[in-house]
Structures are given as C-alpha cells and as structure tokens.
Image (tube, rainbow over all chains, first blue to last red; front, top):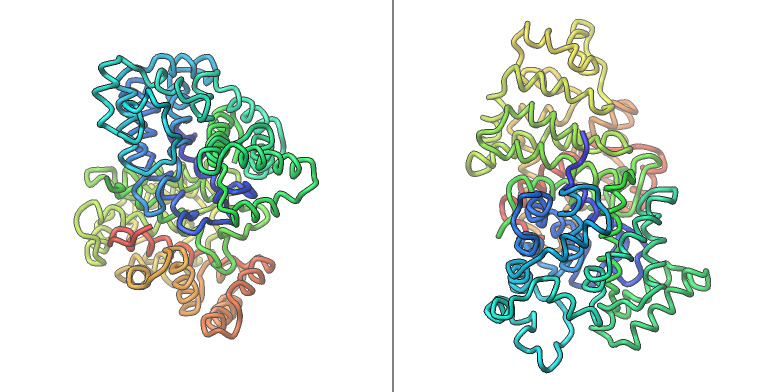
Length: 280
Length: 280
C-alpha cells in the first residue's frame, strides 16, 4: 500500500506547515495572531478533493481543479493558507499523474493550459482574500481581484493560465516557477531527497536556503521590495550561523513578516521529494 | 463548500495530534524518540481512502474499511499512530453517513457488524504492531496478534466485530466505547462544542479531563494497572491546578508513558464535535 499522488500532495502541505523553524511563517511552534496552525491543517484536508481531480490524468483542466482545491482550502476561519502552494502543486500533481514527475513534464502541463484554466484561476480568488500586487495600469481589466468578473476579458483575449502567470513573473515567485521550468522547486526537492534525518528537519534547512537565495515575493507585495531584500539578508546570516534561525523565526513573526511564497515553494519541493521516494 | 464526512474524520485525527499539551502523547510540541509528529500527519493522510469507504453509506463492512484505513495509516516509518482512533471513528463515521450522528445511531452501526467486520479487524493487525493485552487462556485462538490466522476461528464461531470487542472491555477503553453507547466520546464532543477559544486549546482541556477521569487502558497494557491509576491521579492534579499540564506532559514523555487510548478518544470526540458544527 502506498499513498496516492493526491495524498502525497496533501501530505506535502501538512509537512510544510509542520516544518520548524520556518522564519516568519506559521510552523509547528509558531502562529500568527489570526492565522494559526490548525487553519493550515483544515486547509490541506479541505483541498484534498481538488487535489484528487488534479491527480486524475483525465480530470478537469488544472485551473478548474485548482479552483476546487482553493474552495475546499478556504473552509476554515484563518483566511488564505495555501493558495500559492496549490497553484504550484497544480501542474506538478497533474504531471505526476501523467508519468514520471520531471521539470519537462510539469512544464508541458503548464504550457498546455488554456482559457478554462485561466478562468478557474480567476474564480479561485472569489473564495479567499489573497494579497496580490497591483496590476500595471493597462491591465486593470485583468486584475485578479476582479475574480470571475475578469473572465469575459480572459475569454475575449484567449488567454491561458500560463499566459496570465507569465505577466506576473516580476512580482510573483510562483508565476516564475511556472514559466522557468520549476527550477527552484526541483532544486529544493533534490536537496530534500539527498540529505539525512527526519524530513521536517531537512525541510527547515531547505526553507532557510531558499529564503537566503532570493527575496520572497509575498514579503515584497506586503512590505515592499526593500524589506524583502532585507529579509533575504537576514536569512543568509542565519544560514551562515551568524543568527540562530529560531531567533529569526521569532523576530519575523513578531514583525508580522510572512515569507509565504518561500513556504509555497517548500510545499512544492516536498511533493516532488515524496514522489521521488523521500520517506516519512 | 463544506468538508465531507471523511474529511472531517481526517481533520479530527490531525487536530488530535496537534492538540498541546496532551500529556504523554506526541503533540504539536513533543515527539517520542521513534514516533514523531510527522508520522501522525502521514498516518492521517494515509487513512483517508479507508475513511472515504467508512463515510459511504453503501460502502464495504466497516471492519473491512477499517482495515483499509489502517493499511494506509501504516505507510510511514513510525509504527502505530492511529489504530485505536480509527477503530473508534469507524462506527462514528458510518453513522454520520447514515443520518444524524447520535450515540444511538453509532450503537446501531456497532451492533450491526458481522463476521466480515471481525475478519477485517483481525487482518488490520497485520499492517502494524499494536500493543495489546494478553488474551485469557481459553481465548488464545482469538488473540488479535494472530492476525488473519484467527479468521477461520472467527468464522467458525460466527463472531461479529461487536462480539470480539465485547470480550475486551475490561482492558480496552475503545472496546468499552463500542459497547457502552460511545458515552465518553459524545461527552467529550459536548464539552468541545460548548466552550470558546481555538479548537485545539479546548481539546487540550478536554484531554486532561478525560485522562483525569479514568485510567488509560493503553498505559495499563504497557506499564500495568498501577501506573495507569497513578497517571490518572497526576492528570487530576494538573486539572486542579496543582501541577502545570505542560510539566506533566514533559514528565510523561520523558518516562515513556503514552496515554494513547485517551488520545484516541479525543480524536473521536473531535470528529463528533466537527460534525456538530465546531469551527476551525
């Protein structure tokens, strides 16, 4: 008996939130005021039906299954828990259902999305408040905050989900993964698979490395680019042993700084690692 | 969108392990040496397919679905995580699928089990090592540790799962729930529903009350009746404020004393509470 692909994805979400320390994010030992550990547990469980559709090679378009996963995820009182994680998992899970999970296959899935996927993505924003960047002036009609009101425009322009995300790569690390071969996600998975010790401990190290490597785009959206760069530097100091990662975790939570995109990337990396045989 | 019955059961298992302090058990802040938090996450996710069958009113006999849940639960390296919790959830989940979740309906489901349920229960012991009491001398043929080897004897005697559990009520708190109207489980649910605050905090209080009320049968099996009574007394002292529950939790984990049956009962109570509208 082994876990199904959908179960692996759900477990990845659970292992992500359990990973500690994961500076700035809700983890096994830290909550934000209104966003707590149990909200992530309920979010992962609620997403499971949508994950099953993603894991069905003959299932609905991944953007439609993604919307279903987000709807289920939102059935808790904490708000947005795993929107970005699910957006990253969507092409990965479908790719795993179609064959060996490789960057190439995930990219093929991403590039194969169409208008229906984009419509599902826009509708997903109606289930939960997601912090997003302001769109460029000429793109108001495609502001994701318009939710399903933007769908006619999507259809008019014939935009795929891949097209939509390609317009967000400058301010969204998950969109960047979609359009650059999921490079950081698969790199994280390689690190997770190649090391020893309990998987959540490996995941804590990989999280810190991801955060030290690139400014978190969710921090940039909520607190500005300068803060995102500063947080990256503090993570690097922690990775190099100049600060205790536990201290950094306490500090960032106290400052209300939440590097959520990096946590989403860890969830994606954990899924790939589980699919490649990482054991719990 | 609301969670399915199977999702509620899975979430109950996750909320149970996240509840802290939960003296002696793995919780959000404590691990045992070889049995860690992530094993329970994987156990809950792995059980989900079996829980779906339990939540299907036209599904297989509950003992058969229970075996499937245990098989999935066992797909992690920590060993037995939620065997007792699943045994308690089995009739509760099926009852919820059949109508309003009441002690009466759960009892009807339990009493409606047959030989196939008993056979599934015995086979479930082949998936994972479960600490159990020695059977009485005249019941060697029905020792659960015989696994499927005992099934011919079960068929010969025409024993239902309810019959089998009725023979274990003196040393197994879950068997006692099956044969006494699930009284402690529904009482726990009433307490969980009627209080305020985050659900895991309410659950920590209810766990301590359960542990203070009756000696834990899993502790009795592993450490003897005397230790189980002593642990009950220490829980009562903590409940009355004479000891910090966090201290008791640290002590029991250090002593390797694991009141697992009480944790299983909390999982059952959390499921009933979620079905009755407790929010996360």
